[in-house]
Length: 163
Length: 163
DNA sequence: CTTTTGGTTCGGAAGTAAACGAACTAAATT
DNA sequence: AATTTAGTTCGTTTACTTCCGAACCAAAAG
Image (cartoon, rainbow over all chains, first blue to last red):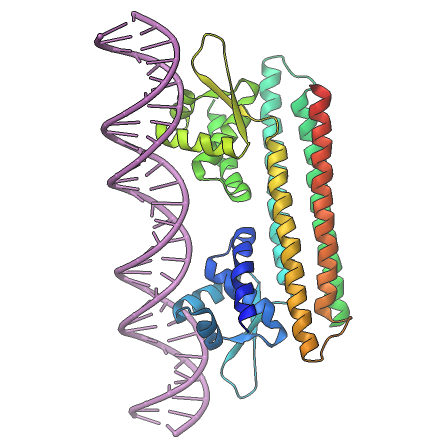
């Protein structure tokens, strides 16, 4: 049982960084990943993660607005059972796609600006090192976005098969 | 000339987020990207970005330790001319490769933990939805890391060709 | 209709990060 | 030798984030 909490701390640090979650949100997220389909109650989270009700509440809402978690209820039981959302992967992927799309747009803006400046100084050259970089990089970003989109499709297919 | 500062603000926000730079480091970075091979002096940065000498100094050091920028000097001129490092792309890619590698390792840890728990409850099933996800995701991460590595090689080739 | 349960909300405290100012250094200039 | 230039260092201030406690609410139970 303590192996779980050790993993929560260890993986928690990673998701804080990779997904920009608050420390507590990240720990809740990992805890719920490890807990599986059963999920965990509000109470369990306050006890296991040793955090206040208010912090747990705030961070559960944050994770819900992120589409990373949901909850279900049991008949005749007032508690909510929070668990990882089946589509949490999709949400993470969407966020990454969005980030790479921004990168693409910004790369273009940089390219446009530099081209304009070079032309202005009659220095524009199609074989310029910078311009070659830019083209390579654009291709690469496209590839990354395609991979992300493809994975998203694969996962959506798996989800639909099973439902 | 004000188009440049507008771009610095706009793109600055993106790199803050995408590369985890401080606001000022991000703005310096974008400013130097737009300034091209000529670079910019310490003084120019304090004036254009309206920041104190100490903040500029600290953030220039940060960007240098990141391998994102370097400087050159002109004969008979005491100033340093800071500019984007030719390998700044490589450094960014290395950081991203590292992040995905962590993701791979952590994905494996989650898989191991869940498998152990399922086996413990005699619930392990090779066709389990979770396990299928995990395999898909591993393949995907491998692909992302390969793309990143491939791009890195392409860029290294371009750099070497030109030198 | 009072109490308990399962949360939410809000104001503030504590901790962290970013930027600053002032004092400093080392080299170059006068 | 004294001053200016080009930066660095360090202690402080400011801003922002995270978390908490206490008061609160709505539904269920006694």
